[in-house]
Length: 267
Image 1 (spheres, one colour):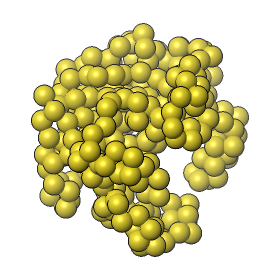
Image 2 (cartoon, helix red, strand yellow; image 1 turned 90 degrees about the vertical axis):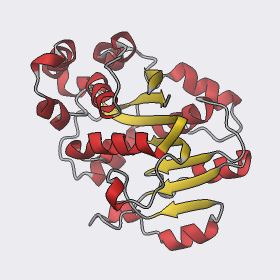
Image 3 (cartoon, helix red, strand yellow; image 1 turned 90 degrees about the horizontal axis):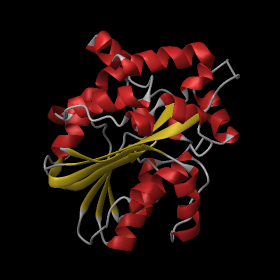
């Protein structure tokens, strides 16, 4: 595997996507994510594409219709979670009937022994605002499984929602900076347990899981830039409220999210 891109979502690209792309680009993190995935490569007819955690997203259906891709979605549609938020009062089966152009697989990625997804089959495995929901201890296994799902020359393209370190004020910023500056001081279990603490920490975990040496471009995903650069895309407040409601949060003071963009290609 080698790096195609490691970066953070920025407003300059978001507004360019909004102006130039043929799809309706929402001015939020997920809108950026899908536009970025669309622009990250040249799509070809017949390519086999897997959306991880896509659920009711229309994006895989768009790839199928616009480019002739063979699109798959791997998601349990909330059937394994006792949470009404994930079911969204919708019927997965009805959704499947409406979109025969996409193959839906009711399972989670991360355990090849219990998966029906064919290994070495896909040209692209992607996700948008999904992998941050994977439990910390399962994150390395999910990345390894995704690497095994793509064929040689295939790509992993993932956008992961990341809490701004500044949400915790200056003490959190300083601890996040120390965490990023001296990663070798923290044991692997600690880093995995705090996988979403910083974009750099998550990237290192993903790279290690897929057999890559660390190549984190600290300038591009530095926590100070993430929190202080006005061009970094931040989730709108109404979407922040949805997160608060979903997670039953009681601390309303800080709830800003950005998006970490990881694009790898298999040799």
